Amino acid sequence: MATTDTTTLQALQGRFPAVTTSEFRGQTRVVVPSESLYDVLAFLKNDRGFDFLSDVTCVDYLNYRDAKDRFGLVYILVSTLTNERLFVRSFLNEPELAVPSAVPLWEGANWLEREVWDMFGIKFVGHPDLRRILLPPEYTAHPLRKDYPLQGRGERHNFPVLARNSA
Amino acid sequence: MAIELPENVVISKLDQLANWCRKNSLWPMPFATACCGIELMATGASKHDLARFGAEVFRFSPRQCDLMIVAGRVVMKMLPVLQRIWQQMHEPKWCISMGACASTGGVFDTYSVVQGIDRFLPVDMYVPGCPPRPEQLIQSIIDLQDKIQREGTLNGREFNLESRQEPKRALVEIPSASLFDGARNPIF
Ligand code: SF4
Image (cartoon, rainbow over all chains, first blue to last red; front, side, top):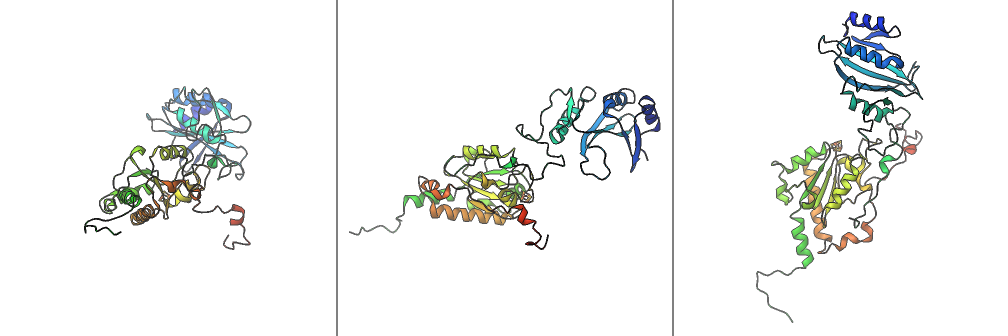
């Protein structure tokens, strides 16, 4: 059972011919070129009633079998009116790791995009406050990238040592 | 010249008296960041009853505590907070590192988890286990009481000893290359 009505997909493809759709385990997915990502999201929200942004996340496809692109940005949209659910994906490659922010459409995108920035280093242009959300501000890396070592680059060891009599 | 003492007078050293008072009224600071904190709560609750050892008064203000119990993993964003809380506690003070995570990082050998608080803080007692049972924590408190009675001094001279200034390590780090060296470690 698809999670999105065919009329929605037809309307989307009529408006943006470059969008491809597919289905996996009952979940409807569309792949959008990153240039038209904001327009697609705005169309889905304003014309098709996707009023709830459930999640923004990202996948690093480095060394992934048959993968052509490095990062896959995923927006999970839900319509509380029609109970539709749509996975909007867009692929990005270095060095153009920037997409327009979705905060003007959904306020809830604010922290979700900060998390993607923190973990993957993808810039959201027009975001009102693109700071790190989980890691300390002085952190320099984006640790969910696959080329970042699991044990870090020594960040967890850069602290002053308190001797017993130094307090 | 011997002096006759009445039967109800005991002679001791002032150090011993101070140690006896201190060890039987430890006020723990519960720095419980993860699952070990649940066992810490169980230790303070009625079944295990830490009050039997005079350490039941948990206070959430470091100013009122003299025993820091670090129960759980400490991430790098939390470590400066932990150090500041430790510095805010009054002397004499002690520290128990409870559980595998606080002592060594445990299974969380990742970029953000501090691999043992004893790299950055002086620790008096380590409690092994994941999580340690309340009995183990109680045993460590009893051992700490022994230690206080044995080496404590009225003005805390023992804290300034040269040998207590070096950071201790519960577990010396094994270089990862040798750990995954198939020749020497056939299980890999
Ligand atoms: S040692 Fe085990 S129980 Fe304690 S904090 Fe770590 S994972 Fe949790």
